[in-house]
Length: 130
Image (cartoon, rainbow, N blue to C red; front, side):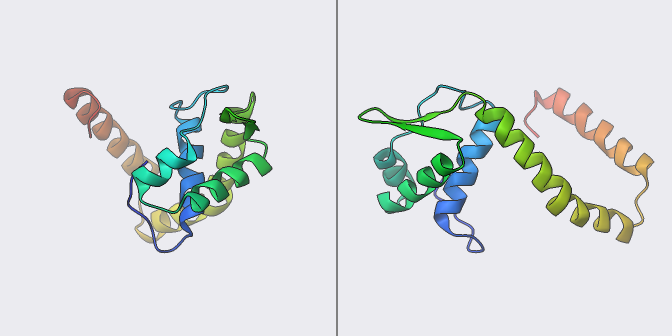
């Protein structure tokens, strides 16, 4: 986890969101252990209580579970739960902003598909590093 923080949101929430992103992209699979609170705190240069608060929120949401003496682990079904939640958040929070920008800039579906194809071609040429 990086040490770059966004001032618009509490750090514990950003840590929580990074764990969610790791679950969605497959970096953390169901049954995997989360990095230890101490390791994340040291790497991110934050207070261990901040990391613990993020992990506790994930546990409260049923995404991870604490195993006494072993740490925190991604629950079975967590990826589906997280993906559903992220889809809903995107559709109700992000998409209206994206759509407003598209309309404001008078972009067409053709413009968007053309850009997507161009980006895909660039990605293939560079091996996915765009």
